[in-house]
Length: 400
Image 1 (cartoon, rainbow, N blue to C red):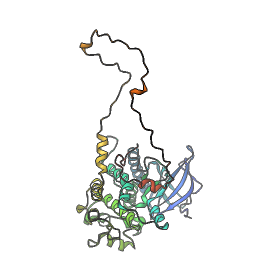
Image 2 (cartoon, one colour):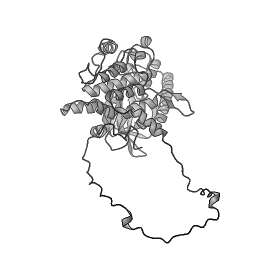
Image 3 (cartoon, rainbow, N blue to C red):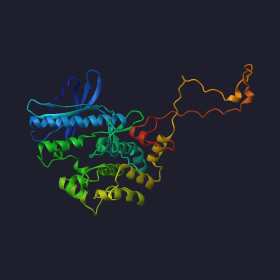
Image 4 (tube, rainbow, N blue to C red):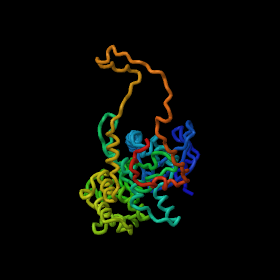
């Protein structure tokens, strides 16, 4: 049972969220299940851990910046349904003076991808193959690509990067809906960074870093050497997530210094073959580039990485299909408008109305009966996601 480290079970935050259950605890926060008292609907509460102490002035600045990040995330999720939607951003101060920022989000009925990977191992199932991984994570790749070129209210284009992408932050839903996978914790890495700026470097623990060490990119470990984070950082995170799906284990593990050393080791990249998965030469080359130490040697954006991976596997480009769908013309029929006039040559022409006559069945060819319908069998959420990879007429944004 997960401990209620903040002691807020049974309380109501912001007069709207009644805290009912502790769901999970990580290095940077605790997730609670709460009920929206007005809507009688479940919500998720992400309560952040702030190491060290923070002054009232620092807390005010943090909350204001935190709300601004949540506002961007709200607009992002409105346009990209694969991004979990925030409902409220605020902070509380406990009786002992502990400052606790929190984010209320939509509740997702599903399982985190890391749990699914573990369950497959427990059930004696092999890791996923590359086509299944492409099918399952293609919507995530498209969502990230959209976020990296996101138009905020007002028209400006900004790059909203995740910078902490990992299986734990991808949830596969359990319901048969068009959106079968969602991204958690967009903006949380930014909140970590803001916390470090306000509080300062308190400790070398995971909670004090603006990224998860086992999934951190080289530019996150050594920004002075490799530059700032960007879309290429999410390329690293998505590639590492794919490798974990293919092997069943995190590619980078150990203590803090060991993980940093593995990440920066140019001689041994955490690619599928290095971690024991059987993939083609073409697929291995894609991962070697996606997981390059220097960001300048990496794919610059998600679309470049994902399209190269699809090409290496030999499946149609999902980004090209999405572009073709967006380019299809749409027609707006106004039923209230009058019909256009007939051409002049039809002026004065009388049209003789013929008597209504039922068509003879002999006028039409016989049509064979349709084949019998096959009732779908019950499938798990993961099987539903990875079934029939890359159907010809389906794409990551189909059925919306």
